[in-house]
Length: 117
Image (cartoon, rainbow, N blue to C red; front, side, top):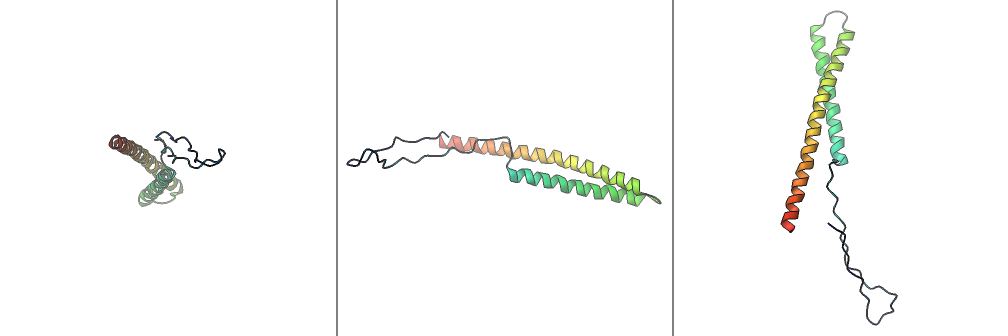
């Protein structure tokens, strides 16, 4: 939307220096942006962290069940590998979800503008 305003009206019988009213000014709607809202970005970040944590636990547990004796290095490698793979997969899912939400907003805005036309 474009910012619109009517010309100020002068009250009859008053001093010319006094402006009586200004018509309502409509603020422009927030422009459509590819940038997701801060809440959505925080939620995606938290989801990636939780996915990485879960992947690390899975990697650690898999190595722990299969390794006998000195297993500190393999457990660490299993934890790191699981965490990286799970966080990487979750980041792909998060990006796809954020893009879908952006497209959804764009479609809703287009439909709203078609109804108003």
